[in-house]
Length: 351
Image 1 (cartoon, helix red, strand yellow):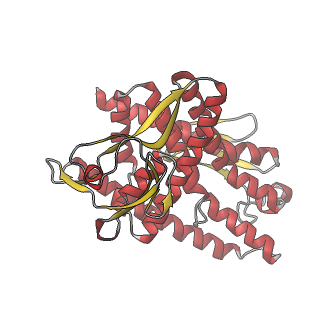
Image 2 (tube, rainbow, N blue to C red):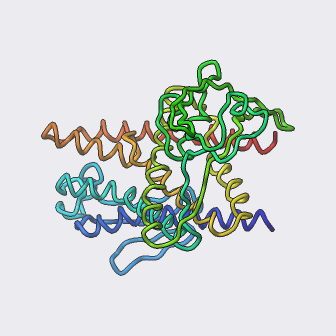
Image 3 (cartoon, helix red, strand yellow):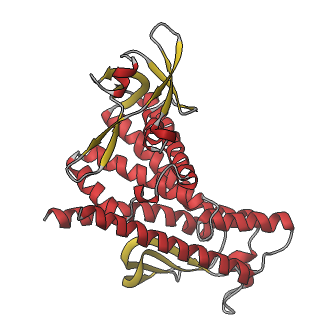
């Protein structure tokens, strides 16, 4: 029974995020008069279809791993039955960019709204990098760091929240050495070079432990909730950027990423923690989807926007065949990566 509930919850969460994203493309395309063939949630075979009064096919497809808005002339004029002015490729460049990035904007708005709701109902967490507790015989304890000290930097990165600190501590570091700049309780600043302790679980997986906790309190009220929503949103964006840069530099392994199977497991664990954490998970995934989509990589929204900017700068359209080929290659590479990540997720289950 739990498996069915978890699957349905995962489909619901992904459905909300995808719907919000695709609605951004859809509503702005309609506003600017672009001809739309189809609005679909999911990929693969159609399981439900309804023709709207506006002539658009509204579909639900079998695989809840994406969605799309099919518009006329996304790259070039491709339908003789559609008026030229209704092709997306014939719209002003700024309108096309708005249509392309609207999905990302919607994802970010959804995340900020959900974070605000969490803070308003359950209180706005106010987390600092002031250490509240140091575990006895831990790496931090051995280094001489005590409760009340404040962490200012980790490996030359300034830190003001634990989200960013977690990513930096998860990254590989030369000789497994991590440099901390700490403000002591008397106001002095001191640099520590710390090697974390390594612990192994029953499956032989290694975990780095530093042995400290940071202060965390909660504030109430609308103003505190607004501040939390925007600060937390920016914190999540920072951690996403660090994750991408870590993957590029090799400080993070691709094996640390999760696909649909991994997310399913996360959903199962999050469900046990209550509605607050489920809402937070939706916000987190919405930021992830938005951030990944805005990257200037072929097949992503950011990649399509980049081509439009290049077209504007050079003053003439880019060869449509070349653009389509680049986007197709990008899509194939993404599918290969997704298959690899999913395979890793499955292997983790059976370890």
